[in-house]
Picture 1 (tube, one colour):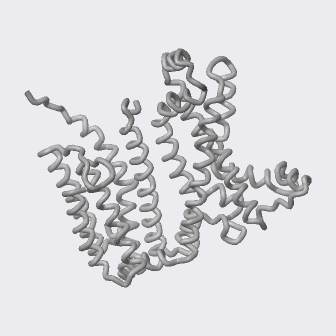
Picture 2: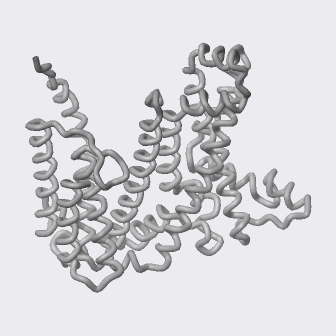
Picture 3: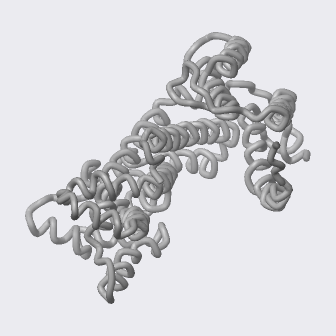
Length: 293
Length: 90
């Protein structure tokens, strides 16, 4: 006997599909159209074919921005993921302490991006900022407007401060969902703290970590407001990330054709990396005997 | 739709992609895909292989356009060939 499956519920996603068509698909198609033309106004446009793509791919400034962007995203992921897991493990599990710590940890997530930039801009100033002033008093010539190393360290610190809580919260909720029986079994087996983490907690965290890593990667790859407010992309172009290069080109110079081509390349990079992350993590789960549930 | 500044190549491109997706849907309903392992290092369904094929085709086009003097039609031909190999043995 064959099982009859009722798929009519799929029609319910139709309104959402329409919404996405208007908010994402049609604009994306327009970007594709712009990327193969030089558009001056509604009546004056020239077909340029692949010219903009060739130009963008061979632009040294953009190539440097891509490398910088990858360096930044991978650095913040390498710091935030282990740190977030660590914080989640240390967070109290019940009582008023749990609520208090949760609120404290969530705070940075509630602050808008540009405000985060402003906070750190003031925080790092040499004359009035707590961090800037303290570092100078301690004898280190800290200056984010002159030293690329200082600017980089500050932006990474800022991102870690702003977004580690997200990983920590996701992991905390993941840890809370592990039934007590697992810990009891581990205690009977006299499992060490490390084995409990490695064989019980970490596998149970895989699902939330997939979401965490993907969100953090996409977020950090699109980072714009914070470095823009903090360093303005400088000193020189040492902290100019992809979205800022794109904005300068599209809004500042109104080069719509080249920036459309560049947007598509940017989109393809994000698509590829997200797919690789997703597939890798999903396959890691599949290889495990219990399916990583 | 004047504001979308359509050109002939893009006006061909999107309906072709839409037709592929529609065709894949019909194929999936007619005979559901079974996840299997081909020459790719991961087990894939038909849809996974289509996605991998389209994404690698996009990168291939970018490489050809950006870093070689070859014609974009070469990239298109290579992509179609690659897509067929991937769908059959991937």
